[in-house]
Amino acid sequence: MRRLLAVKDVLFTTLAYIVAIDVVYYLGQISADESVVLLKLIPVPLLLAIFATLRVAPQLKIRNETLTSQVWFCLRHVFVVVGGMLLFVYLSGVQAVSEQMVLAFALLLGGGLLVDRIFLKWWYLTSRRETKSNFLKVLVIGTGSRAQRLITKYRNASEWGVDIVGALDPDPSLIGREVAGVQVVGDLARIREVLSNQVIDEVVVCVPRSLIDGIQGVADACRQEGVSLKLLADLFDFDHGRISLDRVDELPVISFEPVVHDETALLVKRLFDLFVTIAALVLLAPLFLLVAIAIKLDSRGPVFFRQQRVGLHKRRFWMYKFRSMHEDAEARLKEIEHLNEADGPIFKMARDPRVTRVGRFIRRTSIDELPQLFNVFLGDMGLVGPRPMSIRDVERFDSAIQRRRFSFRPGLVCLREVSGRSRLSFDRWLELDLQYIERWSLWLDLKILVRAFGTVLRGDGAV
Image (tube, rainbow, N blue to C red; front, side, top):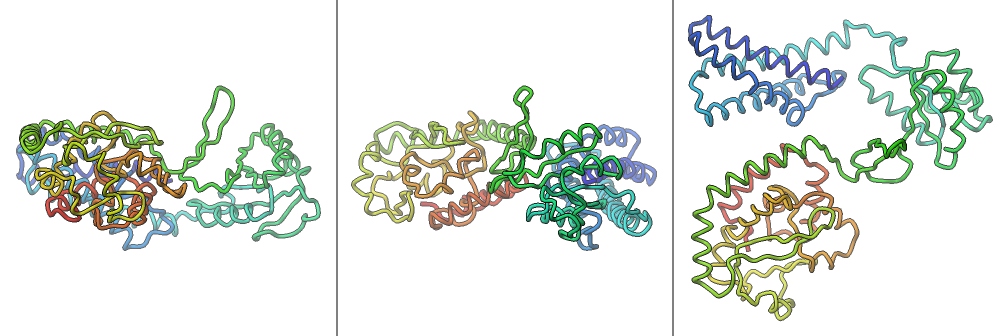
């Protein structure tokens, strides 16, 4: 249902763009040549609509929509699409897009989407008159707590309606009882009879792990009757972000992912990182040269400091920074380790004697971090992600949950850098990293990058 709504909204956005061109043309606001140019730009609002629908303004369930949620959905969609168009026009220098065209497009898109959503809700709840005979017919195998939770969630979460026709249980003594409002109609021996005599769309197995071996008869009956068989996959107490079914040759394998990994979104993230990084390296080349000269004039040693850091899935890589300390800084760490001002395994010191004069400036302005753009280019890091930690700090982790941060590619900035930086405690730092991993989206990355610019310019929390 949500995919259908997403496709509809993308097509509606494209239609609104075309109609807006016709409106401003017939009102005499643009010429025929300008209308042709605008029509050639159709892929721009189309791609923006896809991004807005999938990432920024996700579809709501028609059943649960309120007028406020509908208005908010339309405003977000219009903001992303029209705002993205304006940004494209500004960067590309296209002259054909007038103020009248933008206004007409925004009004048609926003008003049309809102009317469309209101109509769909009216049609769904009032006009459609869906009968129970058209609901999804489900037979549940099992009567325990897992089966009861499934029955409740099926009823609450279904967009089009679900009818639980009954339950079967391995224990014959439960026949005739009600579980979560559903009648236990028999034991497993009745599976073929129930499938033959009733309308069943799918069978869902919710029995404990210890009873899985006895479900082979249910699987055989479903295969012969052509009925879909599903297995409730919460076989273990595993805090998973996503469950997927893979195949190793002919063997089916259930994958439990600890965090959500949307492959398409990660690909877009990587392409965005590459585009921004290459552009930044070209623009910042003169600054790199000036900083390199200043570092060499200020103290002995190399321009760049490199250190092994722990990255994605605990793979080690060399991370690069402009050298901000004296050449023997690593050897002198043990001498001042007792002066550590940070809690947890990390070392922070506001007036670290190992820092050079130039080092203090480039640290305060975060210029020392810029060489990590090379790490982003090489794929060891991203623009946004949990900050990579040194091997020394990782070895001092005192709980397994701290290592969950390694399930995501490290980055230049993350929530910590826009929430206080060095002023935060180690526990709060870790909490923000885990929060980022669990909530990750392209939109969140964009917001962090925008906020990071302001934080760096103000020098907030820099040490």
